[in-house]
Image 1 (cartoon, rainbow, N blue to C red):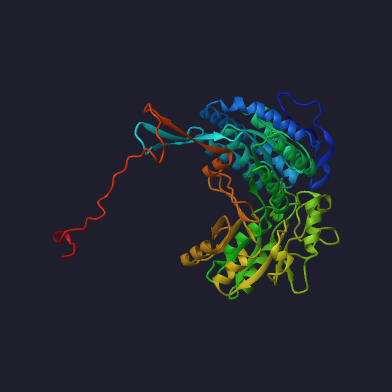
Image 2: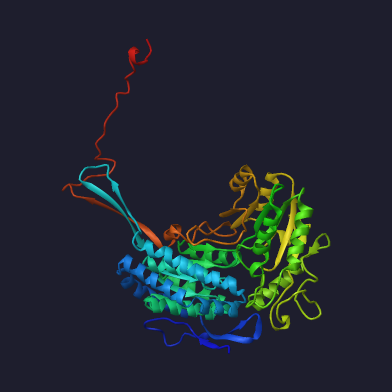
Length: 527
């Protein structure tokens, strides 16, 4: 039997009297809209600033806990997540409609992230640096930034938040986490595991609020000086607003935004492998990943054969109930279904529509062959393969965030790279080729932060940098050692034990070369 949760913000240890005031939100199972996963009390604009004040007080004590001990807390979180892996994955599947196999993979990513950062608790290295003067030593230290406000989307409701929470907490910061409303249950589950691992509630605070209240609250907290770092995962449009707000307070946020990720299919590509990669990255999770394949750019010589094979594979794919073995399930939430309806309105006469028997919502009157389950219960949509895409098409230039992929053609690699960069995003890109020179030239020219060769645009390993450029982000990176620069600041120390004031650049011994010396003839000099 499904259990409904009643959730509200968790701020501690001295929580304000009210943490609601922003209305109520029902988080529904998108595969079965009658199933309410959580009834969520949303906070008003005052809740996030109150949480940052709590975090600021708690952070001072947390930062005094030795980093290796904080690392043990992260290890404990990883073990707790591992012990609850199947339960958490089932909740992710129920709340956002992600196929269970993918949900298991998402939870595994939290475990992998914890495993990696356990060791960083014993590293967090600084440097010892030689001085230009005697009896003086120079050092650098990583120090925590302070309070981080983390705002995350719900398409990866537990994995992506862990990319922020785990390194931020390990580095000695306190966190105020504002998850997506439609993934409130999964967020509470992950937070609960973190608290049980030993993270104090004041060090990790959970705030439920809508976008408007979050933005107003963030502005108030930034003005009050209770926020030292902002991490945001979401759309490019909202990310630009968050970036502008942070910039007014001289802060550089960590922005992980949308993508219009290209995949190049070269004339020497192994076509069946390319079809497999396109199918997973284009339509897995119903195309609702920031790294989902957006534009297929296929060489003219293999275009017809590749499109025919991909069309056949897409028509044969099973779509439906995410608890089963399906390529994808429903849209995450009604707002994403509404957006996808608008995207479908951008299909034009010059497009050839492939991939399914119909376009739009899967219904009794517009069925999908081989559908798994009852489509009438959820937000299920036909997959679309759109051939004949042009560079000025809306679908070519914009993130679609749904089960639709467009196909364009090219003749030269330079043209393919130009098409890949044209939308202005720069998150992920892939190329299928058997020629190393083609692969390396593509890597050199493409503007993406992450490049795959003979692999899909989706799929991030926990120890590599994750992030994009252009409309996909501001160059910040998550995961691996690279994310440490988001949640620490460098502090330098110079220690003079000479017993006198030594002035840099002024009191420095010099050794002058004999600049008028020339080699003698017996050593090769001029006679």
